[in-house]
Figure 1 (cartoon, chains in turn orange, brown):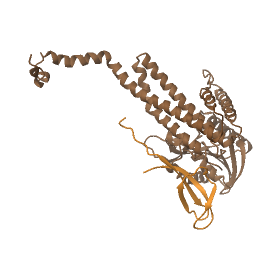
Figure 2: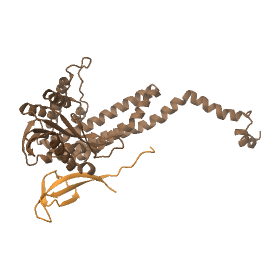
Figure 3: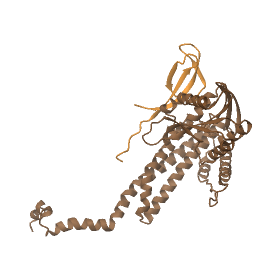
Figure 4: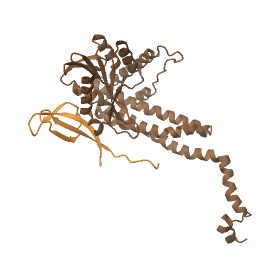
Length: 60
Length: 373
């Protein structure tokens, strides 16, 4: 149809946030990622980072 | 006969009306359209609908195949599972008689609970190794396939009836509804991937906000697949309620509110939910209002409204606007980014409407897939 728009595919991302210095790291979603779970060590302050957001963003 | 003269533009469209060919050029189409106009229109419209029916069939089959593959690969379910799924797809519920609507809500609730419990048991019986999270995911995927199957069947029925009876007026409402049906079907098809991976969906924004608020709180299961946490904010006692994540469930907020209010009636209830946006509205915009913000067939809303009215508890609603597609597929950035704003709006409502020492019940409504607490 005339008004049909091609939708851009969505890519899932995970945002890890440091609980002490609020440093945020954005990376692609990995299977098994779950909100609020502890993940890695913060590169800045060595505190534990946890998953703050999981969302989809369309490719530009 | 001089054909050059006959087909000359002056003769065809000029002032000479005696040309028989010119008569034909005008009269024949008028006669054709008088007698066959509707049929021609029916053909054009129906070919467009037929294409969409094919799409719907493909969506249904693709999502069913994905479900079967998921069951076989991840949960090691036997190969004949496809037949069992075909049986699930045809399950139906006969709504209670509504000629006398008095007392119909408990009947609907009973009916839907029976169906839900039966489906849950049937899904569980597919594999002995299936845990609660997997079971909820499969149950949701099954609902998606069932919805697609139903849409395909209804559209096909209306289309074939109109074709069979050459009934053009019957196909018009279908033609008008088709874009909405296709939007919903595309959303359902896209929902499967988020369900398989256990990613939060747009509808999960309410549980996501409340889940974050109850991270360090004491928690207990209060109703089926529903969790309650207790914490404090600015000398107010907060009861936080949401479905038990990260499973793909909406829990039983109606029952949970009833139990909590019976234990200790709160001074206010705040409900946080996703709401359908109107065209032109921004995705992820937050709106505040009054009343029980909860979707579904209406049984939970009825229950909450009833309890609130009996106890004179005001209900405040916070909704995060989104489209049908956004609500059932992977949560978009625009929606996820609003979580902090929603939390501060909850705090603002609490401070504006309660005094220290009072109790507040905050309910995060929606599917809590991928959102623990």
